[in-house]
Length: 308
Image 1 (cartoon, rainbow, N blue to C red):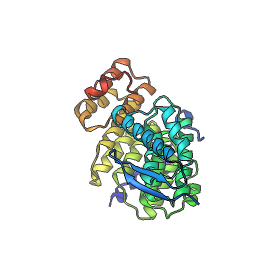
Image 2: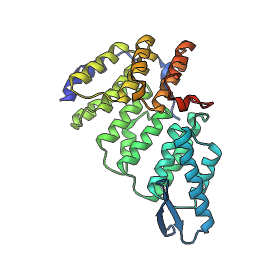
Image 3: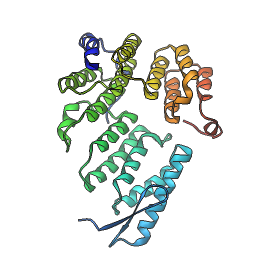
Image 4: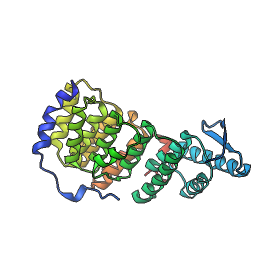
C-alpha cells in the first residue's frame, strides 16, 4: 500500500533534474574465552593463553569509553586507539565490537570523516574475522558510513559482497546512505528494486526520501514526500521530525524549521539536535538562529564547554 503511494516519486525520479555537484561527497585459531557480565552491561572477556592483565586492562578501558559516551556524548580518541590496539590480540563479545563500531559514527566530533571511516574499517574487519556478520551488523555499518558520508557509488557491488542474504533493513540502509551522499539516481534505483522485491515502504524509506530531496535542493518534493507519508498512514517519528527540520534549514525555510524545533525539541535526542546545529552551520544560517537552536539542548548539555 505504501509503495503504491510512492508512485508519484518514481515518476519524479524518472524526470528529476539533478542538482549541482557541490553537495555530492567523495568516497573514499583463537584462544578459548570465558565471558562474564560487568556492571556496565558489557561482556567482559578473559582468555586462556593471554596474560590476564591484558584482558583486565581491555575491559577497564572499554568501560571508561562507555561511561564517557553516556555522560559526555563524546569519546577520547587516545583511549579509543588504545582499545583498538588491544582488540587485535583479544577476542571479545559481538556486543562490545558493535559498540566500538557504532562509536565511529557519533562520538568523535574533533575527528575527520575520513579518520572515523578508517577506524570503522578496522573494527569491521575484526568483526568479520570473529564471526559471520548478522543483519544488524550490516545495518550498523551502513549507519556509520552514512554519518561519515562514506558513499557507496555502486550499491550492486556491495550487495554482491554480502555474506548473508539481503534484507529490507539492508536495502533501507543503502537507500539512506545514497540520500545522504546526494546520489539521487541511485536513490530511485534502490526504491524501484525494493518495490520489485515487495519490501514495505517504512518510515525509514520516507525519511531517506525527505533527505534525498533536501540534499538535491528540492523543497517542493520534500513537502510531497511528507504528504505521501501521511497518505500512506506511515507514522512520523522523532527521526522524521529531525529530517524535516534539517530539510527546512538546508533549503532556506529557517522560520519553519525553528517553529518545528521549538515546539518539539523535547522529542529529539542530543545527537539529532547536534545534527540540526551542524546543518545550520553548514548552510551559513544566521548566528542568532544557530544560538536559538543550541538553546534547545537539555540544560545538562548546555552546561558543558563543548557540544558539537
